[in-house]
Image 1 (tube, rainbow, N blue to C red):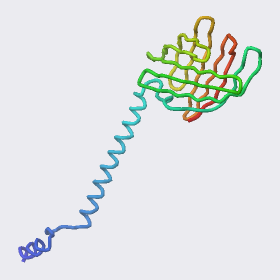
Image 2: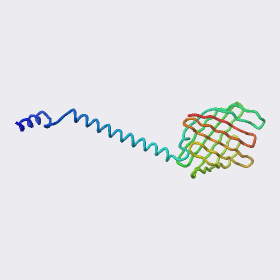
Image 3: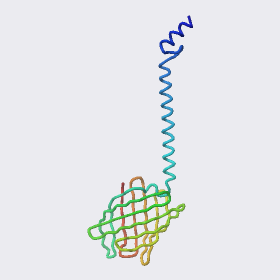
Image 4: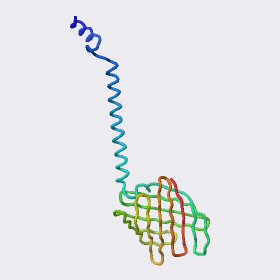
Amino acid sequence: MELQQAYRAAVAGRRRGFNATKTFHLRIARRLATAAVLLGTIGFSTAALAQSGGPFAGLAGTWSGSGTVGLDDGSTERIRCRATYAVAGRRMQLALTCASDAYRFNLHGDVEAEGSAISGTWSESSRNVSGVLQGRGGAGNYQLTASAAGFNANIALATRGNRQSVSMRADSQFRSADITLSR
């Protein structure tokens, strides 16, 4: 009799003691477990990539916004700005262009971080001046000094998520700039 039940089960395409519902639930559970492991691995990899992206990882991309520029004669003007940061590990190329009705500046830089120390070069094309950038920073906060013959400026840059503030103070005809950017 037992042999006959096994034969009928085999003919019907089932094994003896086979529970299709239980097998289906086991397959679903295995797939869910595999998906959870994959998602966990992706999440861990993404976090590790963000941490290993270097000190400038949070800046990468294009930002735009507005602010004010203070001139040597004491006047201030509203400006619109656009910044682009190309980040590759410890290196970053930056371009900041700001303009108003009467004022414009184009700041370009190439910097590298060694720990929290940052160094590099900068140029401002509308006034044909270039120099050295030095400072410290990380975790979204940077304090830099831009210097050239007859020009010194302190630059503070702070990034929190998709918002960024840039503050520059100089000792020449261009006195200050306070800019708020977002992406």
